[in-house]
Length: 336
Ligand SMILES: Nc1ncnc2c1ncn2[C@@H]1O[C@H](COP(=O)(O)OP(=O)(O)OP(=O)(O)O)[C@@H](O)[C@H]1O
Ligand SMILES: [Mg+2]
Image (spheres, rainbow, N blue to C red):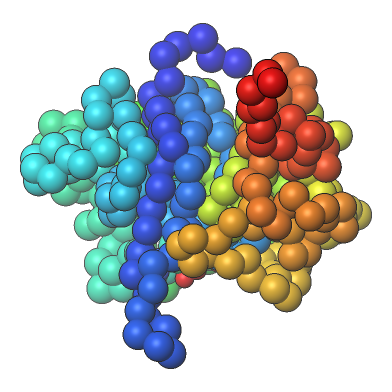
């Protein structure tokens, strides 16, 4: 594990949105008091079912969402409320996003070379033949050999996996320090998912990249993540070293996710039935998982369980696991 200062430092992040309801509008809180650090060269895997707030959190790192409260530092700078377009541009160079659907993010009428050339020219300063060589080299780095041939292809001439490699090359072209990879393998054929994760892993070492790897799937999170953060209803349920969290999950929600993964390899999106979505409306109380939890106690519906250390670097937010008694309000009685 890295000993550097964290590149991303998030503290008590809260994101609120106003949503329409049958009776007007209400606030929801899809990210509700989330704190984490990620260093360059490190992978934090963010795991949870659909609607748990993963993408909302990921988009916040490139400030597509502005935190309602809390703080966000990237590369040592506070970017919580950065508005200046020059600063946001620089942030979005340092932190690149790779999305689920590589086809959607590529222009069908432009060749792969046309996608990459302007970025490599602007951010790495190459021109002429050196620019062509650099684009080809970049394509080979992401596994598209020979690079000169890949550069003249159009997106529709490539497979889903090859297009995702192009999307990764495009992210690399601007010399980023960090990548938010939002479900980068979930739309790909099962047979090539591991190859793309291996590529991301190789790039981590080669370029000392940090990642927020967003996935619904614990198996791939363990494979690629150094650490895991399990999110439900916008709150962290459990976090710790990937092997500790997946090897011996403590939270009943993590255990549920693991049971969906068991024996199937990497799961498909939606494998865990999200029968009852968590209540995200402002003013909710207690643990967001209480309505589905096999270990639920009265206290769980009223008091939000704090993240509590169960082992070195391993924290769990669950009254049943860490003991609800410590959270019982202490009533001061004056001596008579
Ligand atoms: N801009 C927005 N305005 C209103 N609500 C939003 C907005 N963005 C996200 N939400 C809501 O926030 C909640 C969390 O959504 P988010 O996309 O972060 O979940 P997710 O964990 O990425 O899910 P998935 O696995 O389906 O991608 C959802 O209820 C979603 O509808
Ligand atoms: Mg998402």
